[in-house]
Image 1 (cartoon, rainbow, N blue to C red):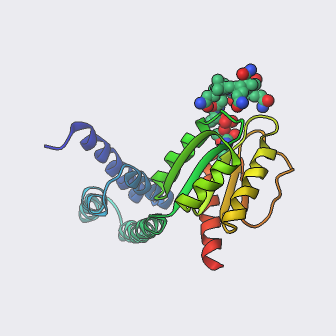
Image 2: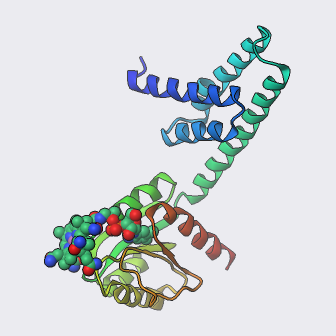
Image 3: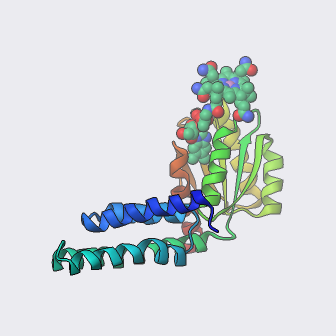
Length: 222
Ligand code: B12
């Protein structure tokens, strides 16, 4: 038997999707499917437990004359577009598989909560995060990068002077792996950090996956 909570979650998502179709709200429909994907439902589960029942409901309402042909056409159009978005989102996630992202706080920096958030977000998005943690000396970071071969290194700086430590770390890593991308964030990031190709500065953890995507795609063009 299916676990009760899982059943309730899927029922809620199915209801949200059906409501979105019946109100012609494509954004809400897309969000319901993204939530279903985030809840780790497979494509088959989304198709059979969320999308198909909503379309059956649309069919019943149409047959009973409760909605018009135009309403049915709009619901179908939204469903077809959402299916394409779902396919594209899965393709992007598959493309990130096996791409390693290293996360570390530079020398002297003990604040790592943001790095832990980043590791979860990157993992959920399909990347392979390796969290080195707090207070990683530049030399050790470079040696780890050489061994683990990350596409991108993310660093978090909170304490004053952290930007300089991050710069030293970037320099050390680039001596061995010049094409490694960097995403740097945290409240102590200053203008001393150069804005140049291959180095992204991000304010929020929620921006990190996009920044890493940009660096990985840029590297692929080289
Ligand atoms: C918990 C904590 C600690 C813990 C850390 C434990 C751990 N394992 O992380 C411990 C006890 C070790 C600690 C120690 C110290 N701390 Co402290 N600490 C905090 C506290 C309360 C919370 C930090 C935190 O987790 N925030 C939550 C995270 C999610 O927020 P965030 O780091 O700001 O990250 C956000 C963004 O900046 C961004 N982001 C951050 N990094 C990155 C990276 C990337 C790539 C991206 C994309 C985004 C991104 O995304 C996050 C979400 O939006 C803060 C208070 C505060 N206002 O933050 C003080 C605070 C940071 N600490 C402070 C101080 C002074 C210290 C100590 C000097 C205290 C002491 N006298 O010993 C030491 C210094 C340690 C060191 N050398 O690093 C000051 C820093 C002031 C400053 N900048 O100069 C703060 C602000 C407290 C205060 N108001 O005085 N601290």
